[in-house]
Length: 117
Length: 113
Image 1 (cartoon, chains in turn green, cyan):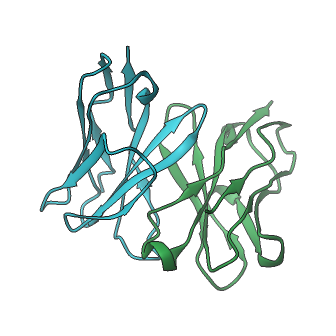
Image 2: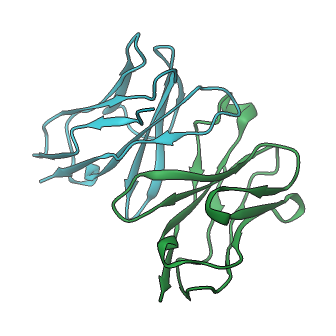
Image 3: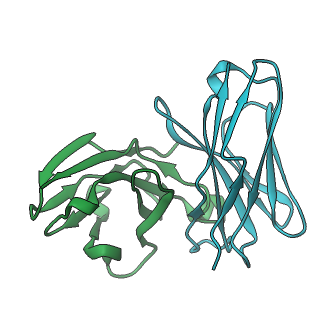
């Protein structure tokens, strides 16, 4: 079975600091990879996705992630965080061949990011 | 464009009762998926419906069931509620293809007492 590991459970950064959140997955086949964000009191929103092609993926709000197949990783980065980035971030993986869809996701446990002024 | 709508937002039920949750997908989306979110287990996939048929299923007991109607709206039912069923239940919709990402609703917070 697939599994997703997010090693950082709680990260506290000052505004303007750089961010990197780790995500590793266990499945060795073709995968779809996602980062979702959940702002306080809001629903899960798609931050960025990787299906194929360029392993460096750019998402909304200045976020990007790099798929490194050899390391089974899909780390999320942002050069300069803002207070409004305070949220919980979830990495997710999908096996499109087995599921036939991108709907069956295995999520990591999430990383709570707190950005201080 | 309206997002995914889930009703009700909050529910309080007693152990042994059953509950039905409702989800209206984004217009044009034919796939509806359900997830359970708890502090201990995180986000876990329950099932996916596409064109009124269950296409994928997670590892939940048979007390958890769902259905999808011809207008793509979906319902999820939990019978014989247990305390451990207390959770945020999230519905997500998509076009249902292998490269169509999920769009989530705000969820229904179920509390079982």
